[in-house]
Amino acid sequence: MDLKYYIKDVPDFPEPGILFRDITPLLAEPQAWSITLDRLTQLVAFLKPDYIVGIESRGFIFAAPLALDLGAGFVPVRKSGKLPRATFQQQYSLEYRTDTLEIHQDCFKVKPGGRVLVVDDVIATGGTAKCAGDLVGLAGGTLVGFCFLIELTFLAGRDLLPPELPCLSLLTY
Ligand code: AMP
Image (tube, rainbow, N blue to C red; front, side):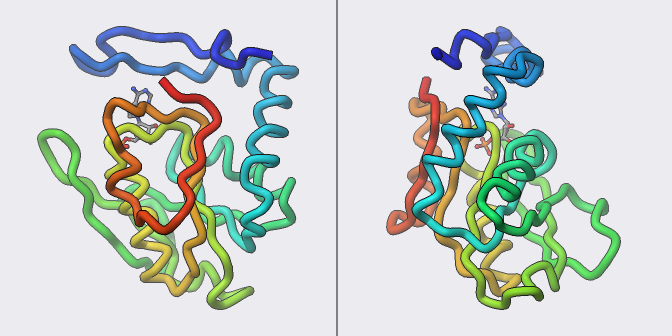
């Protein structure tokens, strides 16, 4: 099944010049969604993660079922001010501003130093994923790789990530 069929291109969203890759048609088609999860699980199983870190908000959609499939814990990385207990924070750059992501300080308490895979829907410039990877380190996890449904290769986002770690993507544009 060609999963790209279920991903719709939306020109000039959320701002002029951005070609937004809309995953909602894929999520609404149970067979395509199920195949997507199977393929993602197969792609990353060899990393044997103890935790899947999902990046707010579309990363959650993929990270949570992936964690269940792999017998791993799910840990959210959220935008500033959303997590209720003590957090580590890290800033990252967007085109015209900076933003902050957070992770709970004790999120890896069940298995200290456990193996952590960072998951998001799309890697574009790589700044968001890099920031999440840095937070994993601050919280004491062992970062073992990154996984994305979609990689926008022309933006070379993977070049921002640690070169020794696998950066796995199911679909490339
Ligand atoms: P970046 O930090 O540039 O790699 O951006 C990644 C984040 O922005 C991800 O959380 C994506 O959900 C979102 N994103 C960036 N570009 C796109 C795009 N063209 N289509 C859909 N989502 C995008």
